[in-house]
Image (cartoon, rainbow, N blue to C red; front, side, top):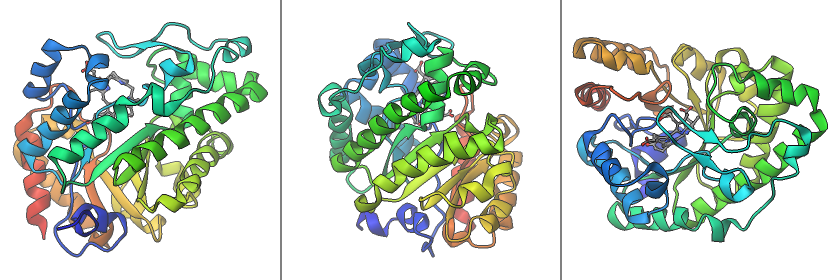
Length: 340
Ligand code: CP3
């Protein structure tokens, strides 16, 4: 069976009449004992730079759960080091050596030869394709706003106030910064597609903290530009937006096939408000910590609520958390696969 005939790709195109596909955001990661075993031996960055290990950890959740798509193992911040902003990943999340805290600091960032500096990414994709030739593979990147949040804040944050202040204090410099990040991201995703990615997802993890007019300017416009540049590639494009609900109408205009919906919004409502698009989501990742019957019941509730299951990809409403029980993921996948 070719990739085009897979339930995942058909669902991306709104034409899936078979079993509902399911995958889990951050499905390769610390909640899996076999992932932790690999991480005993290598650091996170070494893992991201070793094609054989990339393929191994992409395969782990597929083998264990029978998920319908794989996602490249990397990080949305992988593009920063060659851009001139080194990142490390100590316990507790990413840390930038030199956060962009002034307009002058933006001048230190620069474009780079993606094919050369990030060669381990397409090599990783080709390795994944060797061992999992029939599995749809999702490539990904962060949205320009989300990546800029980390660039400016220098680490994780609840509200990314520094990044929000920066775009208002220095709009011209911010525009230049977004131009650079967008241009790199566009070429980065194209490289992933050329290496074999069957779909691409942009993670807009933090744009949902913006006001409406700023969301249009700093989230919708740059993501739309990146996706539009990928028109010719023909692969499905997925935009995940954390805190989608207030902005569904704005996102419905983005040039993409699928919208990833966070757990706060009613998924059926999102589907109704996104005509012509497929939806992906949206079980609250915290539910996985409840009893298995609750996981099954909440999953079933979402499945039954959907008007058009032909354009549904089941997922969590944000990334799976460290400590999530693997039995809960098994129950989630079983419930989705038995639905029809
Ligand atoms: O299966 C997969 O999805 C793996 C690929 C992947 C990773 N990060 C690996 C990773 C993906 C798609 C990401 C996306 C990512 N990275 C996002 C967007 C998704 C979201 O959650 O909104 C963001 C904001 C980041 C930045 C980042 N990287 C953070 C905040 C952290 C630390 C917190 C955490 O979740 O662990 C990372 C590190 C990271 N990226 C890990 C993994 C598996 C953990 C590193 C380790 O093994 O110690």
